[in-house]
Image 1: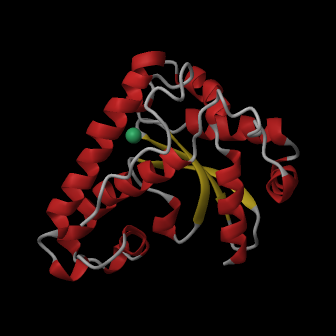
Image 2: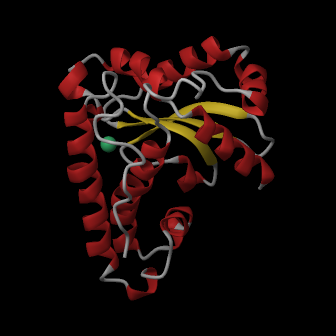
Image 3: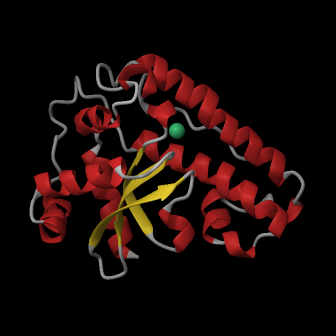
Length: 209
Ligand code: MN3
């Protein structure tokens, strides 16, 4: 049984960059929907009931054919959104929390992209050029190098055996209420709410693997 995680902040905590109405619908309708539909599918396969969401997604190719598509879409949606909420933090009341990565993560970004601005440009390009619905990712490869990519629908890097340390939802439901068709404006605003501390923790964990 998979459950909707609580948000680590209030629905209006990311204002004005991500509006409360979007957050409420995104969490209580979209994410809840992925969780409910995933559970409905899993019910049919008792052998899958014990598996964590990560195990399901990493082992997608080993699932019964009929279950694979549903777990990919619904399970991907569940994992991606859980990861997404944790990738953000309130922009107000967190002045101590950096607006840029620090420490080893900052060094890795510099090594991979030249500097922080170039990383942001590369990430934005990946997010803007993802046609239709999907996600943009900052991933880490087996040599510890960072890379930017995007995936369609609710696919993610886990499904191809890679680690993600940061990701942004570019489905229209993530930004349309506030930004309408202007995905680029949403992406520009997004940098104000990135939880770089969390991203750095993920970087350290992935590197230790
Ligand atoms: Mn979404």
